[in-house]
Image 1 (spheres, rainbow, N blue to C red):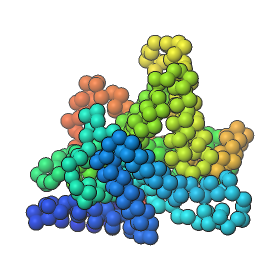
Image 2 (cartoon, one colour):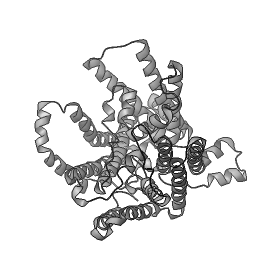
Image 3 (cartoon, rainbow, N blue to C red):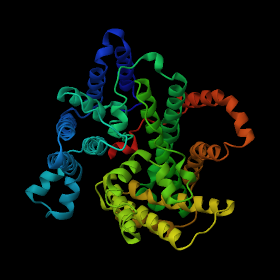
Image 4 (cartoon, helix red, strand yellow):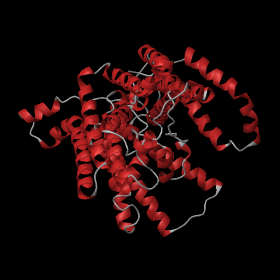
Length: 469
C-alpha cells in the first residue's frame, strides 16, 4: 500500500481517530497492531503469515533471552538470529540460489524459483534480529524492559516489528530506541509544525521529484538505452541518482512524520548525503539506520578496526558485500557492495599512508568524485542483470554523440526535476550564510510552493524503489 494512495490515507485517518479517542487510550498498542497487519496484508494477504512467523519467533526467543542467564541466554539468542536469517534466505534468496547452484529444470530448482517474495522482508527481519541482539546485550545504557510477562512482551514485539510507518522500507529503528517509547500517547503532545513540514517535504520528494524522474530514467532499462548518445546515458545515470535519493529520502521522511503522529520519534535516515567528501562520510549520511545496523551488529562484532589494518580492510569489504546482498539477490547487488567496500578500504588505506590537508577546492573535488562514483554504482540497482551493465558502459563508450529531439527532452526534464535536490543540498552547505538565515523567515512560503507542486505537478504513482528490498 502506497503512502500516497487513497486507501492508505483512509487507513491513516481512521487509525488516528480511533487511536486518540479517550475510550481507546488503553488499547493503543492493539490498535496500531491491527492497522499494521491490515496495511501489510492488502496486496499480499497470503504472505502475512511470514511476518507473523517472524514476530512469533522473535518474541519468543527474545523473551527467553531476557529471562535466561549463562549459556542458555546465548543459545536462545543464536536460535532467534538463525531462524530469522533462515526465513530471509528461504523467501528472498531461493531463486538466486537455485539459478546459481542447482541444475536448471530440476524439481527442487523449479520449486525454489516459485517461492514468493514478501514486500519489505529485509526490513522486518532486521528488526527481528535487532530485538534479539538487544535482548542479549541489554547493557551499555540501552535497556530493554525485563520485568514484564510473556504476553506484554509479545504485544510490544508485535507492535515494534509490524509498526506500519516503518514496516516496508524502514527506517530500521533499533529495538532499544523503540521499546523505551512504548507508553500511552496524547494528541496534545504532537508537534504539528514538525509533522506538517516533514510530510510536505516527503511527499514533494516522492510525488513531484522521484515520480517524474522515473519516467525519464525508464530509458536506462535494457534494451532502450542502446540507441542513446553518451551524454544522454550519463545524464540519465545522474537522474537515477537523484531519483534514488528523492524516492528513499521521501519515504523515510513520510515514515518519520507518520510515526510522529502516533507519538513515536524516529531519527533522521538521510542527512544531505550528496555533499559527502568521502565514502565513509557518505555512509554516515545515506540510509543511516541501515549503516548503523551493519556497524553495530556486524562490523563491530567482527572486530571493526580493532584487529589490525588488514583485518579492518577485510571487515569493510565483507560488510559492504553483505550490505549489497541484503539489497538484492543477485550478483549485481554483490558487485555494488564490493564497489563501496573497496572504496571504503582504499580510502582508509590512503588516510593511513598519507594525510592531505583539506581546502575548499580539494573538498569540492572530493565531493564531485564521491558523488560520481556513488551515482555510477546505482546502475547495478537499475540493471540487476550484469550483462546489461556491460552493454550500458559500452554504449557510453561507443555510441554516436548525436542527440535526437526525444533525448534532448529527456535530459531537459532530468535537469529540471533534479534542481530541487541540488538546491536542497546547496542550502545545507550555505545555511550559515547570512542571506540563507534571512530566507528562513519565508520558509512557510516555500512549504506552500511545495504543497502546490504536489497538487499540480505530481508524477504518475509508483511503488517506492526500496519496497523491492
